Structures are given as C-alpha cells and as structure tokens.
Image (cartoon, rainbow, N blue to C red; front, side, top):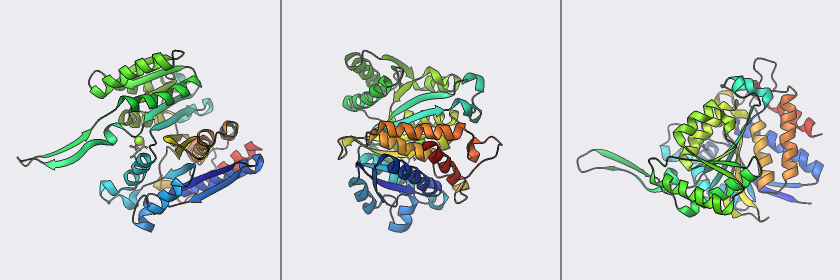
Length: 367
Ligand code: IPM
Ligand code: MG
C-alpha cells in the first residue's frame, strides 16, 4: 500500500479552513485507492510567529525535511502587517522555504472552465472556451535572491537601495527543462518571456532558450515575447499562449495577471518543484493555492476550497507520481463546479454553498 508522506502547513486565516477540506478529499481518495496518508501538521506564517516567534520555525522546517512534499495553505494578514518587511509572514516563510528546498520551478495553471467565463473580467466573447494556459516561473533566482541586496546611506547623505538581477545559464536551462516537459504534455508550444531589449539577464535567457530548445526539444515550437507585450497579450487573447516560461519577477507579475483573468483566485492551484528528489525519486515540491489568506472572509466557512484541493492533486501528480489519481480529483472538482455547486466567489448571484459543502460535492463526484 503506497504511503504518502507529506507536511501540512496550513498557515493563517482561511488557510486552515480550506486545508481541512483538502485533507478530507485526500482521505476519501486514499480509502478508495488503498493509499496511506502519513502527514504531519506544522505552524507557518503568522501562526509560526505567534507560537514560535518565527514565520518559519525550525521545527516546521524539520517536518518538511522529513516529508516527500509540502501541502501549503496560505500565510499573512493584517495581524502581522506592522512587523518589519523582512519578518512578514509571506517573505519570512515562503522565500526561505523556496531557497532551502531549491524550489526553482513554479507551475501555475491558468484554468478557467467554459462554464465560469462570467467570473473573468475579460469579455466572454474573447474566451468562449474559457482559458487553459500554464505559467512556468523561475522561483529561486533573479531579483528575489541576487546579491548584493542592500540599502546604504551614501557619503552625500542620500540613501540608495540595490537589488541584483542575476541568472546563470544552468539556472535557465533547468527551468527550460520543466517548461519543455509541460509543453510536450500539451500543445507543444512554448513561449519564453523576457526583456531582451534592455536586460543582460534577458539576453542570456533568450539565447539559452533558443539554443537549448533547438538541441533538446526540436519537436516544440518556441517563440519569444517581451514581458510588457506579454502582459498586454494576456489581457487581449490569453489562449494564444499554451505554456509560457519566464524569470522570477516577471513570472510573479504575469501570474497574478493570469490569475485575475481566470476569474476566481479560489480556483487556482500551484506547484513549486524542487531540484531535489524525495524518497520516491520524484521531485520534492510545495503545493499551494494562489489565492492568499482572504482575512475578510476567514472564519465564516465560505472560502472556496477548490484551489487547495487542486493543489493537493498537483502534489499527487508531481511528488507521488499518481497521475490518474490527480486527474480523478481534477475531474471531480470540475464536475462539482460545473454541476452547479459553487462557493460565493464563483456563484454570480446564484445560491452559493459553504466551504464544507463544496468539498462534499467534490467527494460525491469522486464516487
Ligand atoms: C507569490 C507571492 C510571493 C512572491 C510573495 C508573497 C513573496 O506574490 O508567490 O507570487 O512574490 O513570490
Ligand atoms: Mg505573486
């Protein structure tokens, strides 16, 4: 009986509410498919600060190290907003986790079911089939981590801050590998997004993409696009993309744009895959919904659990190699939502259900 050993870091506000529903869905498929769930919960984010004085407590990190994957909720919120920026839950929990486990590849599916096109701020006639694209963002390089990263007072009394954008060819190649695999599983189209008309890192990025894809993936159609144009094209005609790959900061911005055109943040999952292998020889990864902690609706039992459930499905796919099970969960979410069971964020004025009932509908669809 396969054992799924993962760490559960639910985090703050709606984090624990949607996490418990995702765990209920996992428990259901585990019973159906004879899988053993072996998970350990640990505090992270504001919960870590409150309990251990740190957004990423050492005990939490140890639990993650002992696991094959991390199922993550979301962190941060008004309660901790007055802390210095470096101690804020988002920055002090997520960034060190990414660095520690070298989670260099962030996959964000931009999926909007045709039945939910009303949820998108784009006109429905632009996306008659909904949206189905994938953003692959480099996650451990570029401006986020490049050194030097300092604020100094200059001799003339002025104050100067520096962030450094730096990429090595090897870092670009390994994210391209992930993008190539993703593109091969879809429409064999890959768009590399950069700012090669201005940035040195982007010149290297573009050259590396061209050479690497020509050598290792001649079966793919590779295109290049400047990031400013990509931002515009996403709003104009998102489905012209299939898979796009980009550096850390551009990916941060474009993935939020992608999230908003896909309607509700409550539906979007993500996977951050590591360079390391877990005990099964598969990528160690962190799986989290895109939506954040939503403090305004926390405690009301109305948050949409779908993104967390879909993130759990990604964990089964990438870190546990359970492709068929992942697909079953994804299909069940789709069946539940298109069948009319909707939380408030995707109900468009029609009757809506709470967090638990939404997960119940997913479980029912799983049979
Ligand atoms: C994201 C978030 C993070 C990022 C923040 C919270 C540090 O915006 O995962 O996209 O910028 O990477
Ligand atoms: Mg972001």
